[in-house]
Amino acid sequence: MTTVKDLKTLAKNCKPAAEAALEAGGGILRLAPNWVPRSFLHPGRRLKLHPDDLYAFGLERGGIDERWFASTTEAANEGRVPDEGLSYAVFRGERFLLRDAVAELGAAIVGDAIWKKYRRWPVYSKFFDNMGPIPHHMHQSDALAKLVGQEGKPEAYYFAVQHNNVGNAFPYTFFGLNPGTTKAQVRRCLENWHKGDNGILDISQAYRLKPGTGWLVPPCVLHAPGSLCTYEPQWGSDVFGMYQNIVEGRTVPWSLLVKDVPPQKHHDLDFLVDMLDWEENTDPNFKANHYLEPLPAGGSEKDGYCDKWICYGRIKGWQCVTAKELTVRPGAKVTVRDGGAYGLITVQGEGAIGKLRLNAPKVIRFHDLTDDEVFVAESAAKAGVVYENTSETEPLVVLRYFGPEVNPDAPDIGGKPPAKAKRGK
Image (cartoon, rainbow, N blue to C red; front, side, top):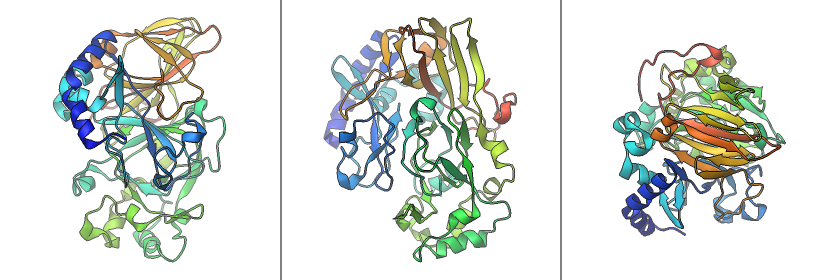
């Protein structure tokens, strides 16, 4: 197990290894799989992790149901190991944290705009994969998260078809609250926390999930994600509050409702109710304002590739994160230019990105290094990255996510032209 002392040593020795890796890779870093368990959930077994390794962190930590991509964000789990949630880059037998590489090289990796404003890589993505639904919960806004020294968390969802050959137990997600719901009704649910099912889902609405589509979820909006394996680009924070106390017969402790709430407010029911964004939660046009269908981003059959926007839109005028799905036809070799740095995961096929191999593995052991994940520095992304599909029969498909405000050409919800930014993080 990696210790805090080990992390300090790695950080101290990071710069020369990171510089060498970036130069050798043409601005592209190879990343190792980054597994995260959740003690209160049931793994869906679609992450390609070997079944013998589902409880590699120990039975008491719960099963591994998440894999995080290009993450410089620590997982907020009780009993966590020091590097939990943090992505490692690997080069010539050495490893270093992406977080340390960004801290050392700054704009040379994430670009001038992001580095000047955030001094870090402020977003990450993950697959979360569960057998059943997740409790109805919300992620705090910046203002609420600041009360406990954290940051808010907007997020987006995409259900990649390659990881959803089965829907598992409940491929439906509850979003928000029924129009007309009152604060008193939500308060009553919290009052009944220790009396049995608190009934929070009785005042919400479920939507059937469709592989190949997604959703945009602002902070302070309740959602109970269903059982599709979900690609989730999001802000680099792990704050949340669970408002549902029983899920599929499993109890949710009160501590997971107030995990990111000031101690003096842990039993202030009015405060907990007021944390919700009432206008967003009770929006009668919720689906129209949050549902995402893939939209063209570039390429054609003639070009040998197809690029699609899969996560897009703005939250109160701010573009938090965007994502694209790139499909390269068998035998094709194409150059793709992007507006900023990105994290990439391969979900189908084999080939290359620049000088590095890409391959979607069938089964992964807990300690395996794979060829399916990379991080692309901004300079390489803007200059153009060469993708090659070396298969004669199967498409090469990759998902890549980008940081805030780097894709001004991205569409708005419903395929509308991009809106002008109104504010920043």
